[in-house]
Amino acid sequence: MVDITHKSTTLRTAVAQAVVKVSKPETIEAIKNDTVPKGNVFAMSKAAGLLGVKRTPDILPDCHPLPIEFTGVEYEINDLEITVLFTVKTIYKTGVEVEAMHGASVVALNIYDMLKPIDKGIEIHAIKLLTKKGGKSDFKDRFRKDLTAAVVVCSDTISAGHKEDKAGKAIIEKLKASEVAISEYVIIPDEIDAIQNKAKSYQEQGIDMVIYTGGTGLSGRDVTPEALLPLLDRRIPGIEEAIRNYGQDRTPYSMLSRSIAGTIGNTLVLALPGSTNGAKESMDAIFPSVLHVFRILKGARHD
Image 1 (cartoon, helix red, strand yellow):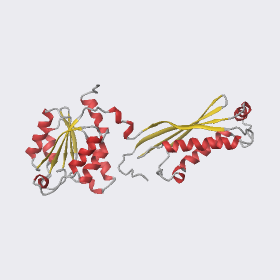
Image 2 (image 1 turned 60 degrees about the vertical axis):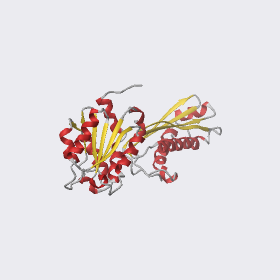
Image 3 (image 1 turned 45 degrees about the horizontal axis):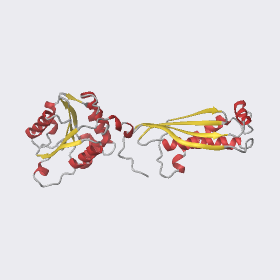
Image 4 (image 1 turned 30 degrees about the horizontal axis):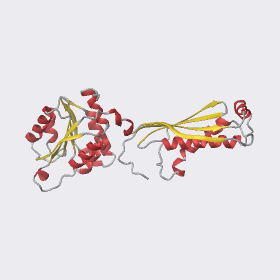
């Protein structure tokens, strides 16, 4: 199965349809009058769909087992066609479109099975996904495409050339995937003055985001939060909580991180862990959703 461990849990919804076409009006009348020999067609088919949707990962090998937290089945009759509308909801890391399509298929097949003794000309058509919501892709097009960022690596050892930077490069990769332009990438030592000067300079240049990596731990040289906190106009605790909560699900050491988030004027400032995994997971936790802040700070810009 595809690795979804990096994804965040969100509300996921999918609606699928299937169309069952009967061959004569008498079949529709039998359904409406509940005179089909095998029983109530709509009630039994709904029950079959509820059972089927929960068995999706047992039948389709690449589907993840996930909690099905809502299933809705609706029927629309139009002349000789019965349209099945199947809705599935979950709060999880991956979507439920396959589950919705599977559920609609099972409902349609059960309708066929129940009606075949009285109608030999039944056909199943148009099994397809109608809508889906949830996950990062649902919000992707809502973010501005003209944003810029500076990435600052705070590390004595890397700035001295004793170690290669990987965390900063992981941040840049995520920014590019989110269509954010990189204005500058720089490595500096763990010095309060150097950290503060970079934040002030980038804010004056009008750069939208300044992302620091490193110096958020508990050693004597970890001073990034101390350097940045006096400069922030506003803290954004929700971003900090999201980063630590996401990390805590992956390693218990995340509780020791002192990542911070806030604004200086209209510039978003983030201080992330210096480890490669810590930086990458922090970016996974908040991007691209964090970009919504710029619709609030500066308003949407339309080209």
